[in-house]
Image 1: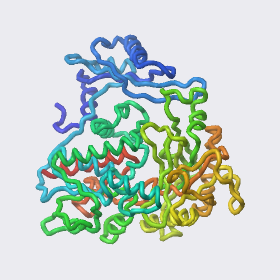
Image 2: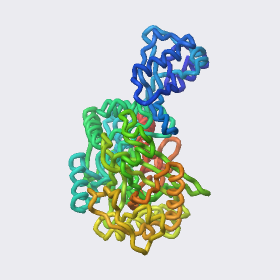
Image 3: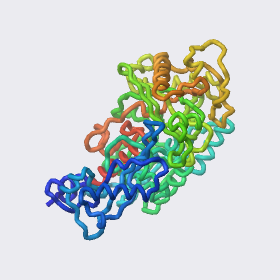
Length: 561
């Protein structure tokens, strides 16, 4: 018999090895159709493909499973589907027949939960309400552990008000902003859920988000997105669910220290008093620099890690759609055009990241006298510009001139770029911008053109200053960006059009440090302290951070009763 606490993936492998017939369904991949093909026609093609292999069509319920766009040939853009056939009750499927057909077996993605026996002396404390902290707290609450979830920033409504005040008036709240508060940095993004990690927890994340109000197509599209306007509602509902399940949520509560008590529990020192807890999950997000400093002072195992810095590039959405889709641009089946471009020379790479079709560049500073940019789209993706980060990889040795090639050097590396952007923008939280034509024409120090055809979208579009980005970014970053833009223009003709606009600085692509943890998910040398998510250096993006939050929750549940 299979082991008791077997995961769905292990169960599938067991059944296939033993010739079992309990597979839940079949995935038929590679159904390539012209743009505009109806779902009914797609399902018909999948059934015809199955007929050729003698699989039991009448015993299956069919639905669309995954959808992607193949735009490699602009004169023949295709929509590529996978179709799922789920076995009706009482139907058995032969793994051998599925293997012969070239289709894939389908099994339900179910989290494997095993509860431990060690007494938990007080409730778990989860620090940070971004994707990692949210999903960790959600699973703990669902399993009866009544967690306390804290975040230094505000609840959703108050946080949105703080961000809007900064956009309109340049008044920055360093505790509640685009980086800190309900939902974390992902709340003010595109809500992109694409991930390259292969983890069954990702399906649980998508299904949970859908249950909380995200659009149903996030489980269908190969590049799913929620949109920041919808994501705010999803996060709010998830926080309400945690509370309904017995958890507690506390905002404007920053972690300032950790004290281990004589009985093995912890006292978390916060801006809202000391909190007693049995374990602590550290999911602070990638911008919690004072949290990193506190952990360093208390001897936690932090190390610097590679990251990337660069700029945001903006094109007109219509131009970008035409570059990608040609005469098919604007077709409702295609939506706003998305892209990912990369180039590597030696060890250093340059790549596009966090592409926001029909979106805007947002003011993402969390410290005074700094300028940071990020990207955001609403669900409709219907704004005038499309933007993306164009980022260059940097390594710990690059931090040496700033404050040594250690953790403090990594943070200072980011901070100096952000402060330089603040100065270049006029010292009032305006953003320094430069046209691609001037950037590639090496016009630093000479008269530079004002943006004309493509207008910056940062802070409503009227808070920018034309300035040389060479005064903001290190020379090797500027050189890599220049080479990357030229290469990208060959891959996607028109990408480096002179009218496109660059805004700086993009410095928060990922955490600059990692909190080292062991196989038990605890910080090395600190049992009961669980580093988690992107801010701890173990994820990159909403879905992977959420999946890491689930891993940590599973580890806590597996140890403690």
